[in-house]
Length: 159
Image (tube, rainbow, N blue to C red; front, side):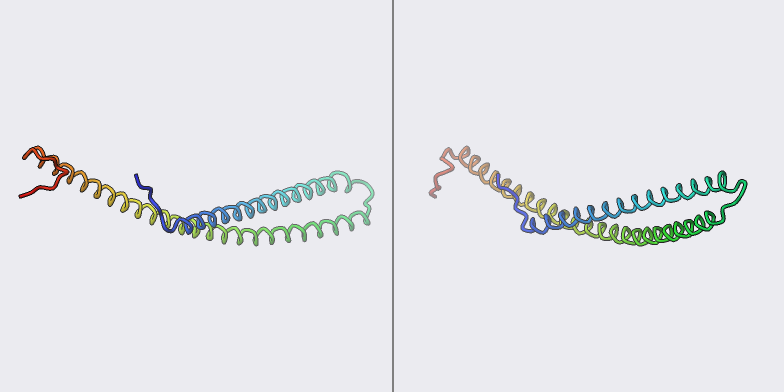
């Protein structure tokens, strides 16, 4: 049986490769976002622990104003770091949205090529079946003619 040959197979392979690349890019960005969220969560827990420590241990008895000033500077620095992390996460989210859009487009382009391949293969199969049916019809007509007049269907008839 003949084999189906899709003339745009290279384009289909390329589009599959592009889609896989977009999936990897999106996964990388999502991983970066998870890491940023984890770092922000860790920073928040550190701040809460530090505030609790100051509240429970440093505000009793004689106050050390130098320590409180240093703690205030530390908290301001941590707040700036937190704001920078949130800004980075916002940029990452924008990149993730763009990567999702690019992935959807790549998947759409690949699906278009797959549909074209399916249609061409269906058309090829239908043509093949039609040719086989025509061949079978010819064979059956020859056999019928041979059975009818007793001559060999492979030999030409003389009238």
